[in-house]
Length: 144
Image 1 (tube, rainbow, N blue to C red):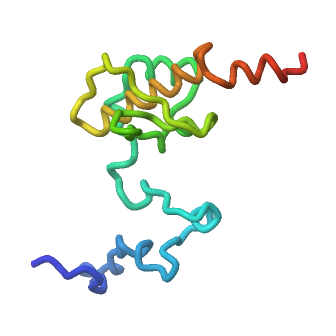
Image 2 (image 1 turned 90 degrees about the vertical axis):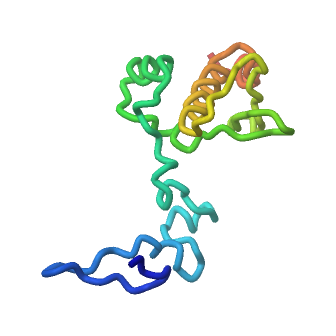
Protein backbone atom coordinates (compact mmCIF):
# COMPACT_ATOMS: atom_id res chain seq x y z
CA UNK A 1 0.00 0.00 0.00
CA UNK A 2 1.34 3.44 -0.91
CA UNK A 3 2.07 5.89 1.88
CA UNK A 4 0.16 9.16 1.92
CA UNK A 5 1.97 12.30 0.85
CA UNK A 6 3.84 13.83 3.78
CA UNK A 7 4.17 10.54 5.67
CA UNK A 8 7.39 10.07 7.58
CA UNK A 9 9.92 7.82 5.81
CA UNK A 10 10.43 4.43 7.38
CA UNK A 11 13.71 2.66 7.78
CA UNK A 12 14.30 -0.43 5.66
CA UNK A 13 15.38 -3.54 7.56
CA UNK A 14 18.72 -2.88 9.21
CA UNK A 15 19.26 0.51 7.55
CA UNK A 16 18.68 4.20 7.84
CA UNK A 17 15.36 5.78 6.80
CA UNK A 18 14.81 6.50 3.12
CA UNK A 19 15.26 10.14 2.22
CA UNK A 20 12.04 12.09 1.84
CA UNK A 21 11.93 13.04 -1.86
CA UNK A 22 9.57 15.93 -1.14
CA UNK A 23 11.80 17.55 1.49
CA UNK A 24 12.69 20.48 -0.79
CA UNK A 25 9.05 21.22 -1.51
CA UNK A 26 8.19 21.27 2.20
CA UNK A 27 10.62 23.97 3.32
CA UNK A 28 8.90 27.09 4.76
CA UNK A 29 9.92 29.40 1.92
CA UNK A 30 9.67 26.70 -0.74
CA UNK A 31 13.20 27.62 -1.83
CA UNK A 32 15.76 25.39 -0.24
CA UNK A 33 19.15 25.84 -1.85
CA UNK A 34 21.20 29.03 -1.56
CA UNK A 35 21.06 29.44 -5.35
CA UNK A 36 17.26 29.12 -5.38
CA UNK A 37 17.00 31.78 -2.68
CA UNK A 38 19.40 34.01 -4.62
CA UNK A 39 17.45 33.82 -7.88
CA UNK A 40 14.04 33.60 -6.19
CA UNK A 41 12.82 30.53 -8.04
CA UNK A 42 13.03 26.76 -8.06
CA UNK A 43 15.66 24.94 -10.06
CA UNK A 44 13.28 22.54 -11.76
CA UNK A 45 15.49 19.56 -12.43
CA UNK A 46 16.26 19.25 -8.70
CA UNK A 47 12.69 18.01 -8.29
CA UNK A 48 11.75 16.48 -11.64
CA UNK A 49 14.21 14.06 -13.22
CA UNK A 50 12.32 14.43 -16.50
CA UNK A 51 13.81 17.93 -16.86
CA UNK A 52 17.37 16.56 -16.98
CA UNK A 53 18.34 16.12 -20.64
CA UNK A 54 18.28 12.59 -22.05
CA UNK A 55 21.60 12.41 -23.91
CA UNK A 56 20.36 9.55 -26.10
CA UNK A 57 18.11 12.15 -27.76
CA UNK A 58 20.87 14.55 -28.82
CA UNK A 59 20.49 15.81 -32.38
CA UNK A 60 23.43 15.18 -34.73
CA UNK A 61 24.19 18.92 -34.61
CA UNK A 62 24.32 18.94 -30.80
CA UNK A 63 26.56 15.86 -30.74
CA UNK A 64 29.01 17.58 -33.07
CA UNK A 65 28.73 20.85 -31.11
CA UNK A 66 29.60 19.11 -27.82
CA UNK A 67 32.49 17.32 -29.53
CA UNK A 68 33.92 20.52 -31.03
CA UNK A 69 33.53 22.44 -27.76
CA UNK A 70 35.14 19.57 -25.83
CA UNK A 71 32.21 19.36 -23.40
CA UNK A 72 30.88 16.26 -21.65
CA UNK A 73 27.39 17.68 -21.13
CA UNK A 74 24.99 20.40 -22.22
CA UNK A 75 25.81 22.54 -19.16
CA UNK A 76 24.37 25.99 -20.01
CA UNK A 77 21.75 24.47 -22.30
CA UNK A 78 20.17 22.18 -19.70
CA UNK A 79 17.49 24.69 -18.77
CA UNK A 80 16.62 25.56 -22.39
CA UNK A 81 13.18 24.18 -23.22
CA UNK A 82 10.69 24.56 -26.05
CA UNK A 83 8.03 27.04 -25.11
CA UNK A 84 5.35 29.07 -26.86
CA UNK A 85 5.10 32.73 -27.76
CA UNK A 86 1.81 34.02 -29.13
CA UNK A 87 0.67 30.50 -29.99
CA UNK A 88 3.85 29.54 -31.88
CA UNK A 89 6.59 27.20 -30.74
CA UNK A 90 9.57 29.26 -29.58
CA UNK A 91 12.75 29.19 -27.51
CA UNK A 92 13.77 31.98 -25.14
CA UNK A 93 17.12 33.67 -25.83
CA UNK A 94 18.43 35.32 -22.66
CA UNK A 95 20.98 37.34 -24.60
CA UNK A 96 18.28 39.34 -26.36
CA UNK A 97 15.68 38.84 -23.61
CA UNK A 98 13.15 37.63 -26.12
CA UNK A 99 11.58 34.67 -27.85
CA UNK A 100 12.90 33.18 -31.07
CA UNK A 101 10.06 31.47 -32.89
CA UNK A 102 10.53 28.13 -34.57
CA UNK A 103 10.23 28.30 -38.37
CA UNK A 104 6.81 27.10 -39.57
CA UNK A 105 8.35 24.46 -41.88
CA UNK A 106 9.86 22.52 -38.93
CA UNK A 107 7.64 19.63 -37.79
CA UNK A 108 8.03 19.21 -34.06
CA UNK A 109 7.98 15.75 -32.42
CA UNK A 110 5.46 14.85 -29.72
CA UNK A 111 8.15 13.94 -27.17
CA UNK A 112 9.09 16.90 -24.95
CA UNK A 113 12.73 15.77 -24.65
CA UNK A 114 13.05 15.76 -28.45
CA UNK A 115 11.39 19.18 -28.66
CA UNK A 116 13.83 20.53 -26.07
CA UNK A 117 16.80 19.19 -28.05
CA UNK A 118 15.48 20.96 -31.15
CA UNK A 119 15.04 24.14 -29.08
CA UNK A 120 18.68 23.93 -27.93
CA UNK A 121 19.89 23.40 -31.48
CA UNK A 122 17.83 26.31 -32.82
CA UNK A 123 19.06 28.59 -30.05
CA UNK A 124 22.72 27.82 -30.78
CA UNK A 125 22.24 28.22 -34.52
CA UNK A 126 20.45 31.54 -34.04
CA UNK A 127 23.10 32.84 -31.64
CA UNK A 128 25.80 31.93 -34.17
CA UNK A 129 23.96 33.46 -37.13
CA UNK A 130 24.56 36.88 -38.67
CA UNK A 131 20.92 37.71 -37.91
CA UNK A 132 21.47 37.65 -34.13
CA UNK A 133 21.30 41.17 -32.60
CA UNK A 134 24.56 40.60 -30.72
CA UNK A 135 26.40 40.68 -34.06
CA UNK A 136 25.44 44.35 -34.52
CA UNK A 137 26.48 45.14 -30.94
CA UNK A 138 29.82 43.43 -31.50
CA UNK A 139 30.47 45.50 -34.62
CA UNK A 140 29.48 48.72 -32.87
CA UNK A 141 31.31 48.28 -29.59
CA UNK A 142 34.26 45.93 -30.05
CA UNK A 143 37.62 47.47 -29.20
CA UNK A 144 39.87 45.65 -31.64
